[in-house]
Amino acid sequence: MAFKTLVAGGALMMLAACVSPGNPHPLEGSEWQLTEIHTSGSTTTLTPALQARHRLAFGPDGALALQLDCNRGRASWAAGKPRNGAGTLSIGPVASTRMLCPEPSFGNQVASLAEARSYVLTADARELVIETGTLRFTFAAIR
Image (cartoon, rainbow, N blue to C red; front, top):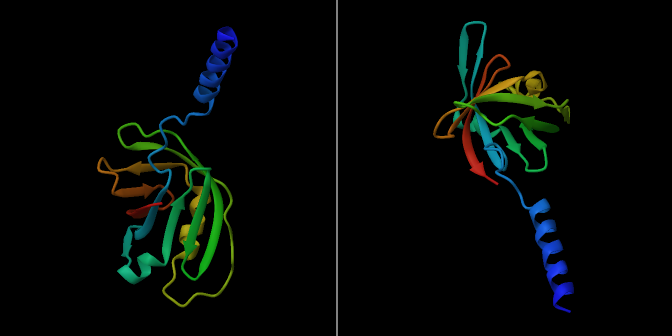
């Protein structure tokens, strides 16, 4: 009887080790809002109202939810662990609704994230720069 208990206990410990989560990626479970867009030598800074309409939410299951102004989008994401704040980023094609949003709208720029290949996360994890043109996001919340 003791042998069966020992074997069952060992099997449970091995199973727990297989399913226990590792260190999650720093983006996992976080939400960000667009604050600046840098293109062709100019910078556009979004007002707080516009920032709230342009957001990213990195799900723990590799799902990315996007608020594209008056539209919503979904994509997949995967990222390498950052080294010195920089890392690789892969965002799958963005599927979204296609309503005509009132100007100014930056939903199309945020939807272009599928072209992203890298990111920079500041040391205090309060700012995220995604290299696409460049989009700058600030931390909004932990989900």
